[in-house]
Image 1 (cartoon, rainbow, N blue to C red):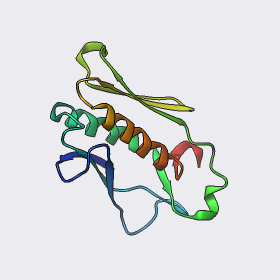
Image 2: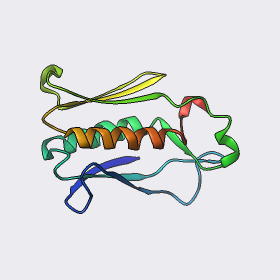
Image 3: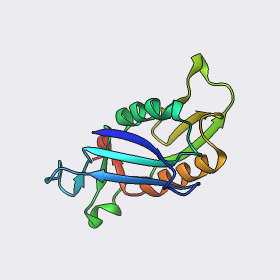
Image 4: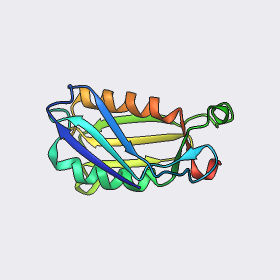
Length: 140
């Protein structure tokens, strides 16, 4: 599983897109994991200096999740974690983005110079929507 972040002027500001590429077969009954996800941001919403760091962080994070594709499994899913995307001025050790994953909350913290407020809101909405059909590997 690999996540690649791209910036494009073709993506409207305040929007995040995702294109998933899957293998032919599901890894487990009713579940699948993309082999690649391309996350798209408007080039004005996300600084080029954070693209590689965000790609690497989300590649690691995504390895722990499956997408639920069998609708009958959705009702049995544990509640999705709370998703927070935050902009801060002070990140430790020169970091530009940090992903903090706890059982009940996933927090993505950007240095405020790396993502606009519109980009932050769009990314948070995107992740909240997507989290409703994804489950942690340990939760299966």
